[in-house]
Amino acid sequence: MSPSRRREPALVDLSFTLDDCKPGSSFDKCVDFRVAAYAFKELFLKAKELYKQYRLKSLKKKLGYLAAALIALLNGLRGRETIEAIEYFYETGERVLKLRARKRGDVRMVLIPEYIDREDVEHVYKLLRRRGEKGTRKRIGFFLWRNFGITLHSLRYSLVRYLHSNNVDHSVIAAMLGHKDIRTIQRYYLRGVEVD
Picture 1: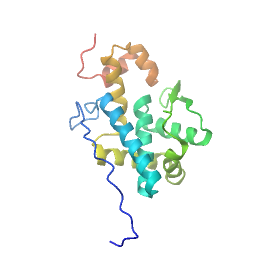
Picture 2: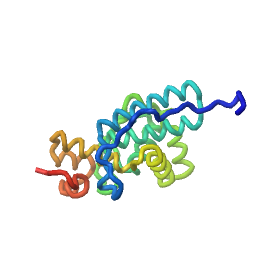
Picture 3: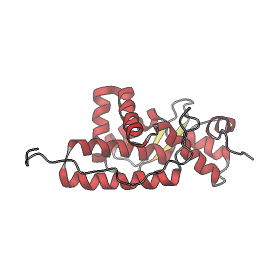
Picture 4: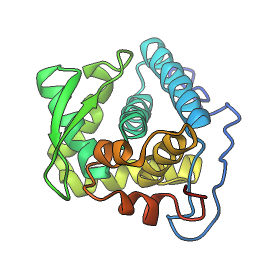
């Protein structure tokens, strides 16, 4: 390798355990929320620091994908809603967003963490302009699956299980996720978990 070509530094060196993740249906795949929130934030901040230092395009991509994962995880968003939140945040710079839930049309509040900047999601925004919403979701999903063995939607499940384990009322969880019926939460997100 020529000395002028810089190598990308290792990004994924955190031990990131997936709790309750079993191969099979996505209903059974759930990442431990606390572990995921901590690990993704640490990876994101490390990628951000390395990008500032090296300015490599591959780090810019990872930074955008990790930002998308964090936004989805912390807000319990579906894939399309994640892309919509990134698009709105990039265009306006607003950190508190009101989005329509994809399935029912209810308005949901989405919060963008203060450590995520518009520049951090620029790659995802440009990818959205080139590939469309579906292509962008696929790229983010492929990144998450290849590097962590999880899907974008499994992050949504982890938030539900975390809230349930902390005794948050199911009607509040349903409202947060844009569901009108709390039975949806119990049927799909808490399958195999004891519900009072």
